[in-house]
Length: 243
Length: 312
Image (cartoon, rainbow over the protein chains, first blue to last red):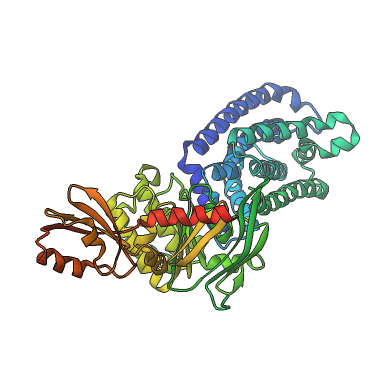
């Protein structure tokens, strides 16, 4: 049942030009930045040769690329998640799901998996960029994978937050704006002190980019996503009461 | 109230803020019944149906579908329901086939069962030719049909149709009414409408709602009885004095409409047409018109709702 809903969501995204355009734009921007990073690396290469323990191409190209990719991701996620529930409520198609013998958890998880599949395909596309360097350089695959894991977790967390916010309003644009605001706030919140630093989405990401796969960081993202999905399920049950 | 009813509703209440949209509504539906919820706009028909479909939770009351409490076991109960909301829940970007397949899968049908169900529903709703077309490009009538097909796909015991014939042309209207009557034979159907002819054409039972309350509920036949003729209009080229007409057996009153036309009042079910025709021949009155006059059902419904309102 979850997969039926996820498959429709996925199809829905790709039947509209939105998903294609977003993937194309993201990939275009990141490819350009990737090329700039490779050029910078080539300029630096001579000086790095003399250094002991010099940072490799993974550190100097892949990690900065992933850092930019995280920002791009956080800007794109609201555009993908904004319609998940708000559009269905506006066009009244949600009635089909609500009257079907499907529980709220299955509806939420189905939609979540649908949009997550799209985001993960973006992560794969981003991963292909540094992987293309394998043709002429030695990559640190561990760091690369850690970075991709971080990017996936980041996307998964942001999508969960976006999904919840789209249950709150019937206007997709409002959902997108609020999601964007929340995600941006969570990125810069670490400036506000030690406690807030722990809440920051990007701080946990930085550790993964260094190749440090810390269970605390992974737990942070998983908790973050679970919490918002839980809120969305509650909200959906609540909709039957209020509407 | 019988235990074995297909749908049993008790004291259903739902408020929007201070407005009691549905107020203490109770009824039952058995298999083989087609229940028409009739009422003006804003009477609470849609709210009632949304609650029956499990889309909206009631503030108070109980809904038992096929022996399963909708609030205690929502998923099992919803399996037994096919619901067409006021606005058919269709994804404009999908084709008719994709939409129906999605709906079938959502209702737990397997791959093979879905295919059979789709073929059956498309056949019955006249959708065979449009299976590959995008829903966004279909006319309103066709979308309505897809909505109906979607509601009956999984052969639910209870079918809830919120204004099912809106936007259909007369030919489609006839087909869909026929379909609903057919479905009513081995399902229980509840449909809402604000059009009385709709109820007359399809339903076996009728409930009239007004301001969130049930104003009247009965079998349709009972309602029909109320509209039995109690007067007839006649036209005579050579009319006798009015008194002669008033003295005919069975006639309780006469009204002179001028130009040789009269309205004769009589007791329900005892029209004096036979006597009249005989007398007209004998007396050479030259009868040229004899029309039984029905009180319109519309009028009865209006009287019923207003009458009820006056007493509450």
